[in-house]
Length: 259
Ligand SMILES: C[S@@+](CC[C@H](N)C(=O)[O-])C[C@H]1O[C@@H](n2cnc3c(N)ncnc32)[C@H](O)[C@@H]1O
Image (cartoon, rainbow, N blue to C red; front, side, top):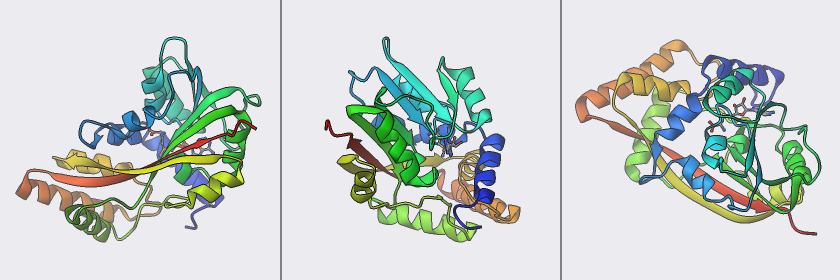
């Protein structure tokens, strides 16, 4: 399946309908030291940001982590099922809308955050233009996106073996390792930070393996491949006690220039 077609959009919608909250479940348990990707992203948002928009909020993990007295965090997503999960877990406001057509006024928010939106929401330029429009001058976009590294030799071995048993790489419609400075500049945003961190999701049971695998975008994968990958992880757990699966992430921060 090509990486961006209506068919892929339907796959995304179905995936999030069948597995609402699964990204949050995996990322909450993905650690670098004591930090999760969400706590890393939250550190990029100033305490002075009183209106924050979380694009592609899913079940609302980031929106809840950013909630503070006096701050409004708007969680926005296309998936009704994800938003229902979000509404069960936090006060919102939760907005069902398309990131490519934000139902918000010009220069109305202090900060925009997105966990994985940069890799998933296509076409990138359409929603980055919208981010630029709704941000106040001097406002920040802070986003987490998957990346290839840093990986230790042991991380690389686990990742390669897992991909070999799946015989497929997870699909991100926008792709990863985007040329961020240029892409952001084309929407009028100035990159001010680009860092990488490696998180690890520790698999200790077959249930953990199945949870991790269910979070991946693997359109059209044969069920027996998923089963093989789950069985392979479970066998390693049986022999080694646990398997740490690397989840490398990139944190990009960009500013809307003041004029
Ligand atoms: C990988 S999930 C990340 C969810 C959440 N940020 C998290 O970390 O748990 C990507 C989310 O982007 C949403 N999404 C995809 N295309 C979208 C669009 N055009 N507008 C708004 N949300 C979209 C999906 O419904 C999904 O919830």
